Every structure is written in C-alpha cells, then in structure tokens.
Amino acid sequence: MTETTLATPKARPGTIPGLRGIAADWASDQRAFKNVSWGKAMMWIFLLSDTFIFSCFLLSYMTARMSTTVPWPNPSEVFALNIGGQHIPLILIAIMTFILISSSGTMAMAVNFGYRRDRVKTAALMLATAAFGATFVGMQAFEWTKLIMEGVRPWGNPWGAPQFGACFFMITGFHGTHVTIGVIFLIAIARKVLRGDFDVERRGFFTSRKGYYEIVEIMGLYWHFVDLVWVFIFAFFYLW
Amino acid sequence: MTEAAVHVEGQAAQHALHSYVHGAVASGAAHAEGQQHPIKLYLVVWGWLFVLSTCSYLVDYFGIHGHLRWSLILLFMVLKAGLIVAVFMHMAWERLALAYAILLPPVLVLVFVGIMMFESDYTHLLRVMFFASAS
Image (cartoon, rainbow over all chains, first blue to last red; front, side):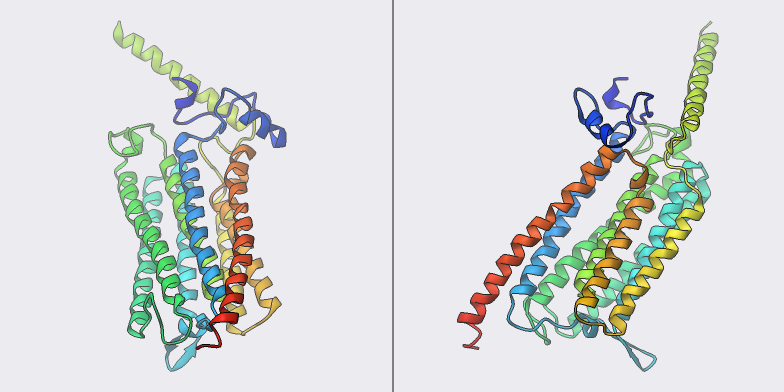
C-alpha cells in the first residue's frame, strides 16, 4: 500500500486549503492530487488533451472562415427545417442541444445515486443517458443525410465557401464519434452496476478494485465533457 | 485459530472504515464517499442549462446581429460551460491543485486564437489583393 497507488485516497488531515494549498500540493516528493484517485485524475488529464484536439478543430474552422473571400453559408438557414408547413431556423440543432443537456442531467443524478449505492436507480439513469445519447447520434445522422442530399461535400456546397463542408463534417463527426463511444461505455458500465459487480468486487474491467462506485463518476466526467464540447460547437459553429 | 484471526482483522477494518467516514463527515468534506450533493442542486443546474440554451437559441431566432449577438452568444456559452464544469463535473469541490492544473492550460488556447486571427487576416488580405479580382 504505497501512497502513490491508492485507488481511493482519503483526504489527509494535514492538507492546506486555498492558494497556499496549490504550492503545498505540488511541492515535492508527493502526489499532487491529494484526494483524487488516479482513475479520476487520468480522466481529467485525458479530457484536457481532448480539449486541445477540439480547440484545434474549432481554431482551423475559425481560420478558414476568417480568411475566405467567399461568403460563409448562413447556418441559421442551412440547418432550418420545415415542420408542419412552418420554416423554423436551426430547430434541429436546438432540439439536439436540449437532448444532450438532458442526458447530462440524468448522468449527474446517476453519479449521485451511485455513491448512495442505489444500484437500480443508477443503472436506470445511466441507461436513460445512453438513450438520450443514441437519440442525439440518430439526429446527427439525419442531419448529415439531409446535408449530403442537398449537395454538401467536404470540398464544396451550393451556398458559399467550400470549406464549410470540411469544417462541418470534421467537427460534428468527431463530436458524434465521442458521443457514440460514450453510449457504448455507458451501457457497459450500467450493465456492471445493475449486476452488482461493484458491490461484490467481481473481477473484470473497472470493477475489481473496490466496492466503490467511482467509475460512474469517471464515466460521468467523460459524458459531461461531451456535452461541454457541444456547448462550444453550438456557439461557434451553429450560432456564429 | 485462523478464523479468529480473520474475525479480528475484519473488525479492525470495519473500525478503520467507520472512523474514516466519521472523520470525513466531521471535517465537512464533500468526499465522505465520493461526491455527495443533494439531487435538487442538479435539477436546478439542469433547469438553468435549459434556460440558457433557450436564450442562445432565441438570439438566433430573433435574428439579433452585430456586437450584441456575439456578446450574448459568448455570455450564454461561458455560463453554460461554467455550470457544467463546476457542478456536473464537481470541479467546484475539488482541491485547487487539480482545478488549476486542468482549467488553466485551456486558457492558453486564447493565445493560439490570437495568433490565428492575425494569420487569417493576413491571408484574407492577400486573397483580396491578388485573387479576388480575378474571379
């Protein structure tokens, strides 16, 4: 039981709060993240690296859009839908946003019930999250199909700057991939939760460490990050 | 004999767990066992995220343009991102050593944004000067 490999560290009595605590935590010969397990710290660091990846995508989109002399297609019009004979701008993206936010809400509550060791509610909320996520991906597939039918390609489109298609497919495609992986991950963990793997410390992926539901929170971090990225994509790509 | 030893050991472990939980509760830490917060908090944040998303959609729906549009979009975006990171991802309750390690590096992306804005302005200028008239 060396200090660096604790799976579920406890906050030790000597930890200093506030700004002085940063210097103390990072000081020397000790673990920097006092009361965070390695699993959670690694997920945060992975999310940080993923932040840079999405930042690069959004930055290249910004550069393409700022440097082109051809007018950029108006996303408000491109993503409009005719519902019941009415032309509503950007409605599909708005619904997708609400769906993803709802999935974040159910995920946050799943984490909470996980720490209360309420297996059934945790698994049910995780499966609800996965269902929202799958709905989101389905709507994205619909959106892609619609745009491809209208002639949007990575190298051109009927409305303006040819870079629009490349940026759109790259950014939303990468985000959709993240959502899809999240849905698969959610279903796998929900199955383990429902089966009680964390209570009996069953051997297997993520379960054999402790009778402890932290993996639900780590999963939640990933899922909330996917929602977070969508907040930025929604603002910069669809509303700008 | 072995049975007794196991029993004693189990009792000791139980006692240690008990004192740990007790200590965590006494010190008011959010880490009694992981993150424990009332469900109501999540529902309130969820509601706010809905309101903010509706607001940013309405910016587009009513066709607000110019500086007001950009500032409103950015404001709603930052508020939403802040709520998600602080409450849903529990960053508000983590120690500052983790929060700063994760939240400060992305801020440096703004430097990259600045560099690429100069760069794309320059590219745009060249395109206007040398290519736009030809097409």
